[in-house]
Length: 155
Image 1 (tube, rainbow, N blue to C red):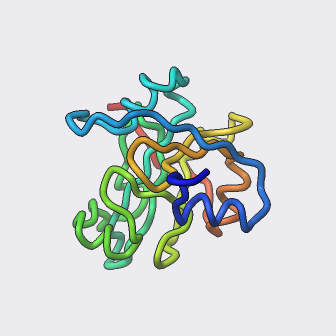
Image 2 (image 1 turned 120 degrees about the horizontal axis):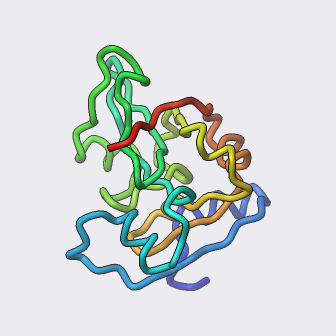
Image 3 (image 1 turned 30 degrees about the horizontal axis):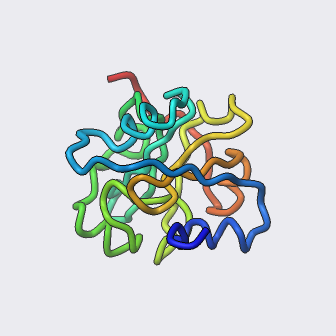
């Protein structure tokens, strides 16, 4: 796995969970990193999740939602808004488009859209554009101390 090691992969390895890493050639011109992963890896878009960082009442919170949907900020709280990208990068240690829910610099509260629970495994960013981590939703929740809730809505 040389050259593919990220804090997210290290966190999964240390936890001893079952996971797979999927890599593809990232196109810097891609408009949506999640959609790019779906297309290049031939995945079911319902099983590929994007990691977004929101500011909920002054506290950064990670929301993990299907790439084909959008984050319902109201489901997170009355005064929820998308976090400043630079603040998200500083808090997580990842760059925008490659933020993983695992291996963050500072563990942020995490909410996984409950649609993930319908699948044996889902795909999330492995911490770098062009790198996806496939793991069980229950393992993601256990490793992050997160919770599942309906936080996604159709575009």
